[in-house]
Image (cartoon, rainbow, N blue to C red; front, side, top):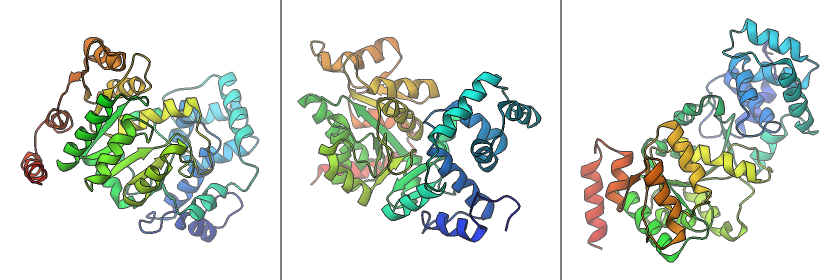
Length: 358
């Protein structure tokens, strides 16, 4: 039994439940498995993007943070511990009290390791910063980084983020928007890029379908659990992505998508990808939120122009005019955003020629 132990489980039991959601690419040692189990439990109680929780986990570690949440630890004690740990910020007592109450109220009544058992039944994999396959690009989110990633698909495909591009846009896409999304995703796939999007109707779905048809990995980040395939009309598409690509979520299986979670999901799309391209977006499109995250992170941002008479392209034109997005009109120009040095150009051109000869 380790000195650091997960509540109500022995080290052997922790190894068993964590092993059930990491088969094929295991955690390297006992401390990393304990941290993963603690993160999974915390992810049931903590909403995406909760910077207070991230501060505690970063200062104390996942397991001590979990113990503070499930125990009777006072906000005064937590603040003192933050000071002793050399935390970059000392939260006010009232804010800590509200945060602890919030997390304690959301902890599942089931055993703390219930998310791991639920994930194992689903066949999902748990990836955390302690896991060798963790996409390090997400660390650029700093206190906004996710506690966990739940994955449906082969975790070895997580290496795809090293050469990836996000294609996002309107759910109510026009024929023009869907056509551009299909052609762009197909062209980028032939150039060796993984296509990242949000699994929604319209531009997202078109981009995913084109990547699947091209035999390239495509990644869909979900706003709920990886078992909550939303929207329902894309169920077949998302099931295909789970088989040959990656379905990913930061919330544990069983979690319900909400408006806030959709908005926070967008930061993962932007952070995980080498560049983000908005294919088509109206003035109030949610894809502008993804573009905002990309801009804040300093990631390359592109936007596809449309007819000046089309309200469906007003958001793209605004990104170009006011936010410094690069105007892109072809897969080559999009690839240049994500791979400015052209280090994969020869291979990409060869694949593109092959596709053109079909």
